[in-house]
Amino acid sequence: MLRRFLPCLALVLLLPSMAFGYDLTGQWEASILGSRVTAEFTQNGQMFTGVMRVPEPGGKINVYHLAGAIFDAKFVALHGSGHVFEGVMTSKDEARGEFKIAGGPVLDVRLHRLGKAAN
Image 1 (cartoon, rainbow, N blue to C red):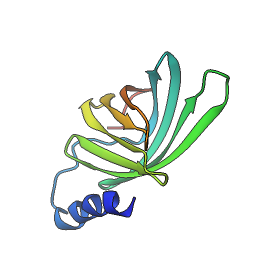
Image 2: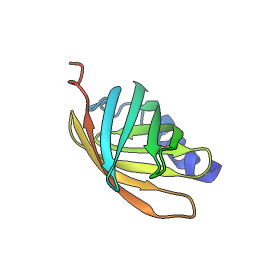
Image 3: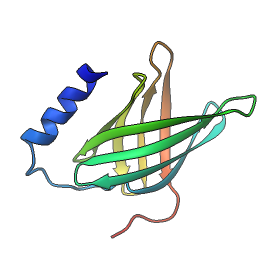
């Protein structure tokens, strides 16, 4: 996991002047394989942390604590077990990307903000 996080950290340290065009802070939802997925992110500068809740068909909820960075409209977030969520903001209230399960499938994700982005 450290090898995946170091390039992200290097970009944060080397590009401090990059404009912050998007803010992920807030509550989001998506549909993955027919299940409603929720996420909540908090952003500070280019870095963000969050929690993504993904239900299983039997009703169990998998909780993923993520940490990542956003550069312009592109973002990447990592989970301690090696899962990676990366994507792009398509507007202030929408994003699309892929949730790459470590050793498993890659899931397409389209996120929609619940409520409006802060101005």
